[in-house]
Length: 85
Image (tube, rainbow, N blue to C red):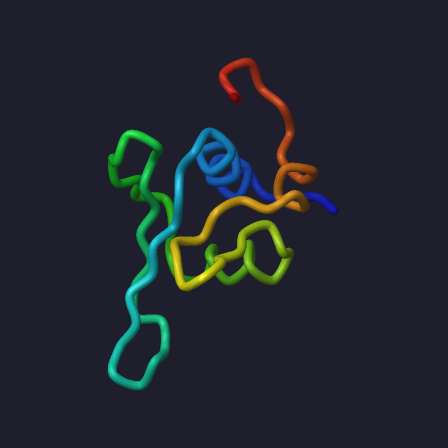
């Protein structure tokens, strides 16, 4: 399964220790999505549509109500690069 260039960038960021945090509204629906690097910097390339695509492909998941992190499936989808840890 091929993934887009933006999905590839986000998966690289998550593979290096980043996370995706979501905020929910009063109706318990996702209101906003923000991606943080391992250093705590905000990465602006993630929106709700991209998050849903990654979740549908089972590349990210959350456990115990925590932030979304990369899964084994996500690691299989991401292509290796020199800076990937």
